[in-house]
Length: 127
Image (cartoon, rainbow, N blue to C red; front, side):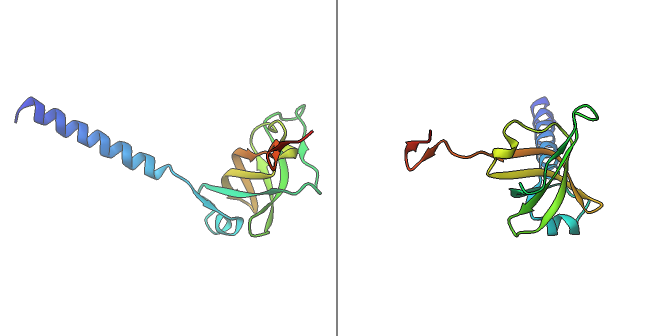
């Protein structure tokens, strides 16, 4: 075999390895019910913060831990344990996307994405 063929085979093998690795690390969107059915699997859960129950966060005890309650898009409410500090304007968010796993009836999130309210209403800025 020529050197070019060997290099080509190695490049193809590396590309296949990268593709398989990226597919195994990908997560999917789910609700709390599906996340409860598969506790070891990481999911993105979309929902809204339950503002009637206060967010528990004490940076003096642990700055990288907070808990709150969220309702998913199907209306099921669960306690969420976020393993990082509370993001800025967390209480103002319209919608949350949690990335994490279900453990012992609670959703343990490693990250949270927030959809914040729009500055504009019908093309006119809010004051």
